[in-house]
Length: 237
Image (cartoon, rainbow, N blue to C red):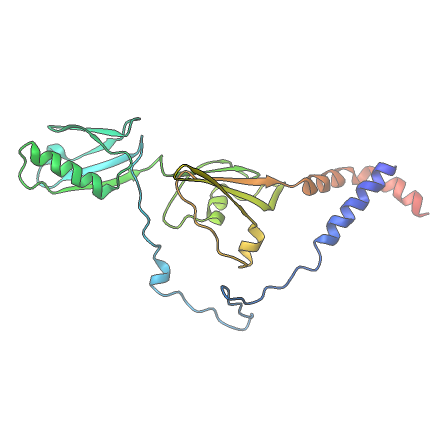
């Protein structure tokens, strides 16, 4: 019985902590409009994501188009070491290059092989190297493609949202910059409320959503509630 009452008290404290949420207010980075004010439409520039370099990596699928020379136009998969094989020029390093850089490398190799003024275009058709790992308390942990517009909230949405026991103020982004491992701690609720910007996500980032013991405690309380009902009624009487 004492354990049951302790559980009830804990849940009551948790419920109290959920009351009295601070209202959303304008700040230097956020303008809050009331329900009677129409939100302005975005400009054309707002609808275009800033360009972010996409690098070719191992096992990516790319297309190579050499204008006027059909035998050199093909779809190619980058091998595990980051190289591709092309007729006449053999193997080339593709890993770590942009599509434009690889186009230039192929054109230079074709020129050395005797092709006059080759016009080469490379496109990344499918990338398995430009991904973010989303782990922890999300519905569908896994690897997800990184696009120009990828942010923390979008990465979590890609993983089908938070799980039952997710702790919104304990979300970590792990990133390697140079040889330095960096961890950033974020609060999803604060981001949703505009307290600070939704952070950008880059290829090879790892997002980890923490576990909430309080949510587990609440789940345990709900499961025990039918068993606690009779003793509690008897105590009240």
